Length: 415
Image (cartoon, rainbow, N blue to C red; front, side):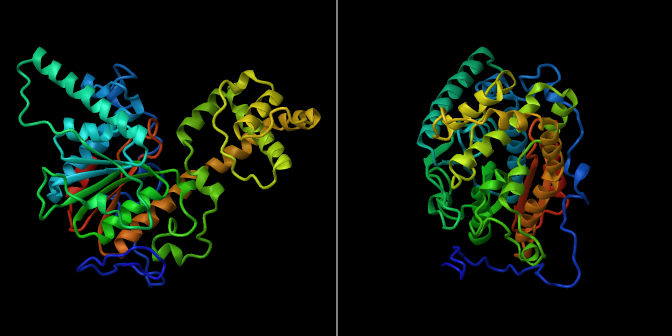
């Protein structure tokens, strides 16, 4: 059934709104004992995670087979989120985990072959799914070889690789495939846990909507990303409370800025290296693009390598080519030099804009948390990643029955 906004809706039984827009008395959302943004969100510690003290490229908390083909940032993320999902699954009695937007399947593989969970992995890109399946087989072979080398390591039960499905998930429609139990899972009484590691744009919103309207989904662990890709209608705001705030709108530029890594950029500023001129060069490129094609907005120029070694006109030519324009367009070199002379001011402007990034991200995530709480669900925002490694470090955890103090267990690392 669809509601008046065209969004699918299956009414959850027994849930009533806790917080309504325009209600008197604003109650702070519960966030696992945290009361404010900033340090409460686990940011700014400046410490290297202990798992990378011995080797910055290899997590000491993962065995070699699970580290292969996985960068340090992703090693940290799949371990922390995977362990949280395992605890949440045990606490809520879930029979199956659904990893949405799974990419190459690194998280799904760790949860299934490393933590023993039953996992369905949903990804819209056929090529990524095929690679994930190849990596599954490679990991299985590596684990078998490791067992032969170490006979004392005994596998307690049969190994189940993730079940991969190629499917695009429409954020505005119910995805029945997402809800289907696996063949070797209980066909009746299935309890699902939805998760997504940096699920892009509206995909995170789709997870929330499926959690809210589908009784078979018992728990949620979602890490969002790419806020600039949220739909103008339906992606934000989700909660009635935020929708009732004056000036709640977040234009594209603010949402895009919320995706930048504050900690990484602060380090770049301290070093004051030539790489900072990227901002000035990009601003000049945007000016040229707008002059040549005024209707071309947000052209999506991918990163151009070794910017500090290029002259500004060389950068502009490469940028034009990347957006499908003629790189030999006549350029006003005097105007480009004038742009380059403003380099320090452009860096200052970008730095000031970046200071708003945590505020904007906090608003988006609190909107999602309130959306769940308004419908009577239990939700928390937990900082589980080191922001130096993974700037989008908050996971939104939700359940349909209260966990009480057990929420604090989810945040702690396994020994």
